[in-house]
Length: 106
Image 1 (cartoon, one colour):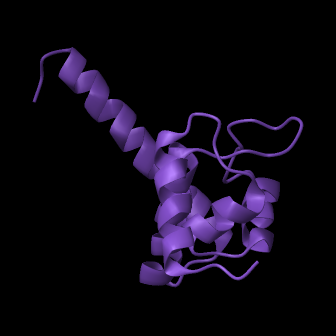
Image 2 (tube, rainbow, N blue to C red; image 1 turned 90 degrees about the vertical axis):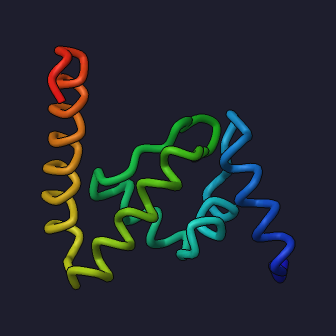
């Protein structure tokens, strides 16, 4: 199948709205990456499919995570191990900010 711009737009729209998510190849297309890169992210523990059986399926949260990973790699010329550390730190900051908001501290 040769994807067109309308196919990509449809895939992205489905990914963000469809709770069942996308299988590997359409998901990789929506992320602008190759399926092998997505497999590598899963193998490295940087990405967890929303559903694993009968086939991997990915949703909007995973799409945002892959885009963040790609942006970190590009902007900082970082390898996946460095990206993993950056993601852990960013997630900890988000968790702490949410905790401060719940405590009424801005």
